[in-house]
Image (tube, rainbow, N blue to C red):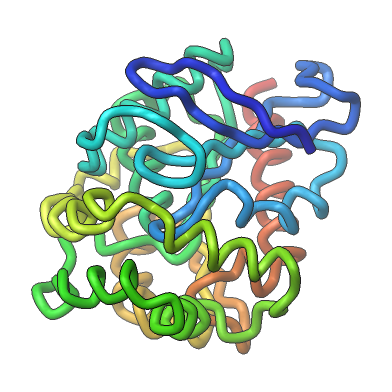
Length: 269
């Protein structure tokens, strides 16, 4: 793994790159690009990357999060999709496999709607509401609390990944997650209310899968079922896992990603 920076649009994007040969090589197949969710950074993909040793994997810190630097605005799902477009352009990656968690799943779905020719396959992990976030989840006071109280943040974060190992990686995720910009946290609520692609997602035809945890109380159940319906795809449910399968069951996520990538590349031949 190498930590890097690159100028992409109006952002200086911090990202992680995992490669079996020290850099991207097209002979290894198309790269996998992973996008984290809210209150997270690119580090959340560490364990998934370890299970994909034959693939080149890129994971950026999204605007307002991690070590990425730029203006404190542009937090809509459509704007974050444009950030991803600029990031891929800066790396000269013309076509990729996309994997996203929660907010990141929404961003890659929006990206695929806008630039379908750039997307070989889509893995949506615990995706957000495709018809807009319900009003009961619009809680700016909770976001403020998570910023001001480390113990409260750690407790809420742990509930999103109940079976993840509480190891050194976990401690780092808690620390860096809470450090995301307050504006990013508050604007995220508005962004999820406004993002309502709904039936438009039926237009996506690239190989795609949805992965959720059986214990996901945030976007599991009917939320995930609706996403699977409009995407006309299989819903893979991992037993005894919460809202963060990439942290709780990285082997499962890596297997789905690898199998879908192979399927997509065979279709292209």
